[in-house]
Image 1 (cartoon, rainbow, N blue to C red):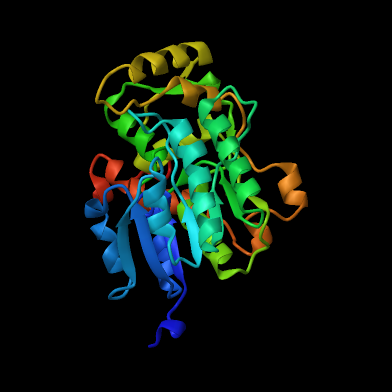
Image 2: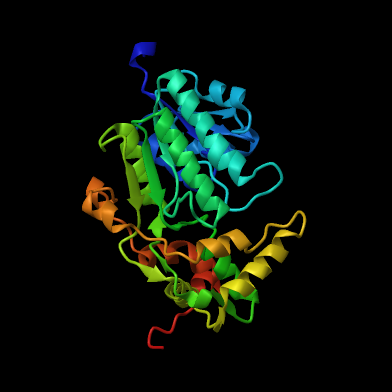
Length: 326
């Protein structure tokens, strides 16, 4: 095969993360050459068996260091930015990763003449009380200024085998006497399967969806926070009571948990702020055809996917007998 006949090269920033690894899989199945840009390439080797021999390569890159970003994008036909953080640790702040980092990737893509797909989040809003949401919005704005034809994808809560939502509360259900219903559990969410998000990214790389638009990705049903926990408990066959926790109390707990050094906080004050607003696909996105269904993807139901990976949280794992009459 000559160089001119090689498949397109796609650089995926954050390719070893939760969403990123599924994006790499979706692209590999299509035959693209993939360059996975991560801070620790030595920890990303698990991705290699996903593709054929030589199809997936790795490069060290840190969004805080522009030179490494430029090097990772050099020669790429398309760039996908999957990098995001749910809480701040050390120098990996929301500003550094989701604002400065998004701008650095966009500028590098423009300089390389590459197309760009950027993963943001529903709820991105420069006027939000959440730093996470504000920096997501600033990152989007930088991307649109720099690469006007970029595809921006805004998923709701993403679920899948390595998620930090259902797995977190299923783990808590193993040990905690009760589960907290933050703000009474009334916040509306639209959980979207990570495989569907990855498919949307792959289609943007294929060029089969309109560029220069912001797509909002949600699952087929809107669930309250309470309904999400009830569904999870039913699947793992546990009966932990759900106890309402006012936003103010939850925020205080989150602030205290974030002060513990070298420990991943189960909850942060910023995450509590996010839960004060619904996280669902907007009416405008549905009306304008900027949803999964509009681009030809039938989103998966929560109850169809969750048992495939939450089974390990049952008392006897896959061998637990579930009383279907209860």
